[in-house]
Image (tube, rainbow, N blue to C red):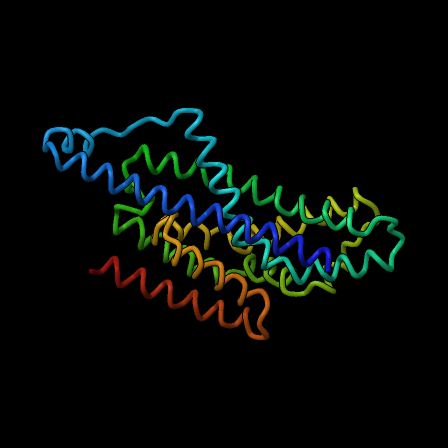
Length: 254
């Protein structure tokens, strides 16, 4: 129960942050548009000039990505985490709650590393003028290419291998179990690596629907959760991959 409450608490806190950030960015975008409409010259200047990021802005974007990954990915790891806590209580582990916390922290650490890569990618896209103020791709071709790439990856052996480990908590724990906090840390990192390998390109689709589009964020999070947990999630994921390829191809053709 303590582990379940902890997972729920950090997930809710992360979603509160994401919702607040999305509303703040939407408000700032509207204010910027209103200011631009007051004068056509400043608006044209803003359209043609790419603003460099400051160190503070980079740090804020990194924090946004990291917290968003917690909101989206911690629930998908809940079955694995709860099983780990149950096994730790029966194994040679004097502090099962502490080791479970280490397990979750190292899992989040792996997604934080991914968040750093995502922030760098966002910076590159922003400097190439491929993102709107709401972090949506301004290039139909780029968005279509992301969809096709995500669809193709859904069908690859690497995707399937990573997803198998995420979908089989008992198999994962029996294969990689290590005692103690150090063992929990290593296991959490390994699980995080498998989850990143499974879902990294799906997170790239945030640039298609909007990094701060709450409905789009929720849709991807639900898709990942179902893919990892429902009986035929791996099969439905392949069908979704084919659909992504088709939608991307149609977008390119149009």
